[in-house]
Length: 160
Picture 1: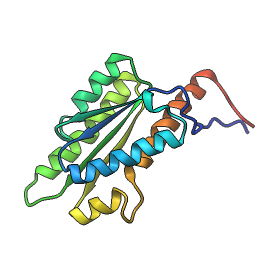
Picture 2: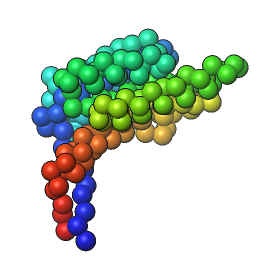
Picture 3: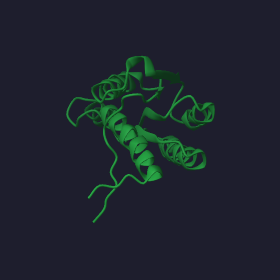
Picture 4: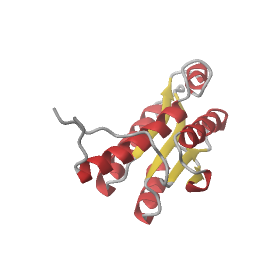
């Protein structure tokens, strides 16, 4: 049975990494993980552009600008939304996820959601590299696979 799979080779890819400054004690660790993941999979450091923005809520706007620029093959979106005592968390997390998904679909632009949403600071720190791996690294690998999978589908590259 023929199958199509994305490969984890980033050579020649130009990647934007959007990182929220809000909760920077977490997002900087996610950024380090993402850059490490991209480099380990062959993306040249000169082809990685880091774009810092205020917070997760603003991310879809910036991602749309990145997609429309046609300068990048894909993007990694990094942020940390930590639950507090108000419903603010619910609005920010939801709108961030929906906005990124909309940009991906409307602009046919591969993007990986590396925005962690947690109930506690400890959970956020764990997901940024302490106990649960680094979600920034995982998002970087995901965007490479998405880009390569899209190319394989468009080209009809199947394997047996």
